[in-house]
Length: 175
Image (cartoon, rainbow, N blue to C red; front, side, top):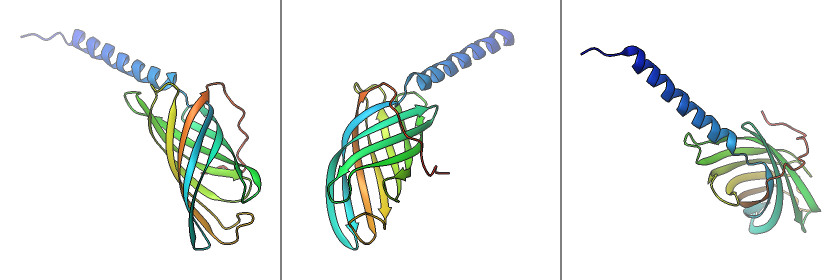
């Protein structure tokens, strides 16, 4: 039996290009960019005393390729009132283009703190898009709260606009 290697090779090439194009379209067609509203709840310990709390927040997110930048605004009545945190991180699409996940870390805020947050895999088909995340936050410089504060926080966010928001530059860009 004679095999036409030219035709088989061409067929394989066409399939490879089609699969690559589909992956590129899936990755290029979805962006997390937008404005979000949501809440986060935290299990907290300050100076050895445990507590828990939750509050609403609004978040501006800009995605460029696989890089994301975030400007989070919230109000804390125990600290300074209106506060902000800036973040930078990366996201990744699943090979089939159905979900996106990633991480971000603190790179500027109202006062010094360390934080890293994991974005759980989220379906890009959701209308409106929404995602959950979980992070660990720590600071020994919380205004009006002496001692070391360490928190584990869960975030729930829903996109309310796909327009590209203004996101301030990070003051301390993570490596």
